[in-house]
Length: 219
Image (cartoon, rainbow, N blue to C red; front, side):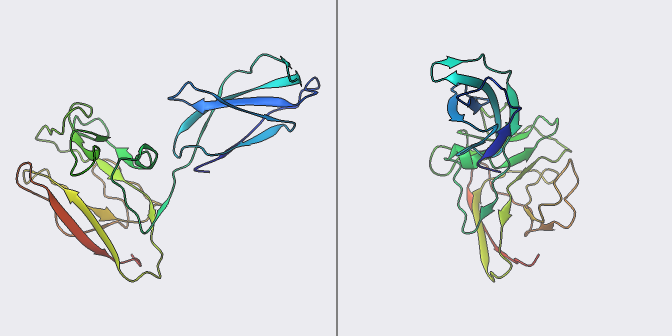
């Protein structure tokens, strides 16, 4: 799931006191451990859309264990958000649920500290891996940022609002789409059945504005 995983292994006859499982984020070397008498274990409180490494060893007693197995990997699912939803990109766990399709273009989406309206973090385009909120024109390639958010069809009025700045040239604009999660953006292709919200976004250089869209939950 997005917050837990079940790992399993073959039984070992000498495991008279059960097994010990160790696991950690691929980006963090600090292991957490749990013990069990079963040949499976549910690992709780995991970070969504993240890679984890895990390994297991037998326990003949509380002080006598085998060597660890080799590392294996699993990947947690994306957490689907529900309305009401707010994201200021200050929470690293929630920010991790935003997905980017950047391709090979020098201009890429990222989450960092170079552009924000409040707090210390924001999501922005960069041409130097997040150090600055810079853009290298011209570009004929589309890059995408998206988040899965569930909107109940019984909701009549759902307001989407966010702050933005985009001093674009006509050929390089910023647009917002809403669509089903079954189709994902790719390159310059708009996802199938996606609906563009409003027109292209533009501001004067370094000027922040707020966008407002009333969403149709039946789309």
